[in-house]
Image (cartoon, rainbow over all chains, first blue to last red; front, side):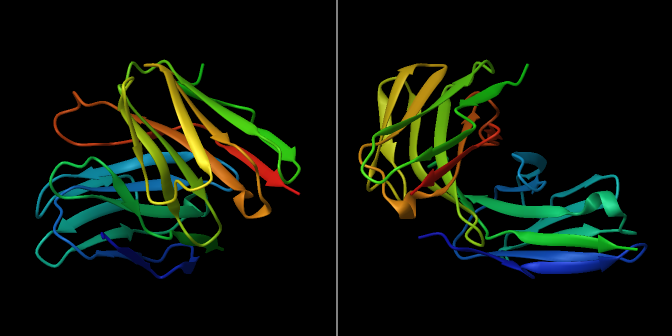
Length: 112
Length: 115
């Protein structure tokens, strides 16, 4: 069974500083997805990472994937208030089973 | 208009009642999924369907059933609702022609409360 672990689960950020969210998973996979969820809202796709060493960037967010370490990181640069949300990583099982296993989510609060 | 819609958006019901949650999509995707979200647990897969004739159980299918009425419609039923089925339910879709990966797109969610 594929297990996905995110840490930290809660992250209080100060505006202007940099932070990292970690996503570890238990079995081989080279397909990983990051989603954002605002309170009471749906999940919005942020990044799709499809190979070892993949790096994607959008604004103040950068995601990377190390399939050998079974680790993805979501780096937040110069945090601002509108990045407050819950961030989920999801890993696609190996062997083309097309199912996603989600981490528990990291709830981010950015304070002034 | 939203690409993935869910009805109802909120529902309060009583223990033992039968409930149906509906999902429709205009994205033209062939794969559809039902998840439940509980605080601190991420999303758990209930059922998924890769085409109209294909239905598969996810990790927490007990107490739930589904129907894929058309490529664009996927319904989730709780035959006899119980309080621990109180949760936020999401429908999602993905496209098998998307280049070999499975980015999923989510509906707005249905908040279900079972008293």
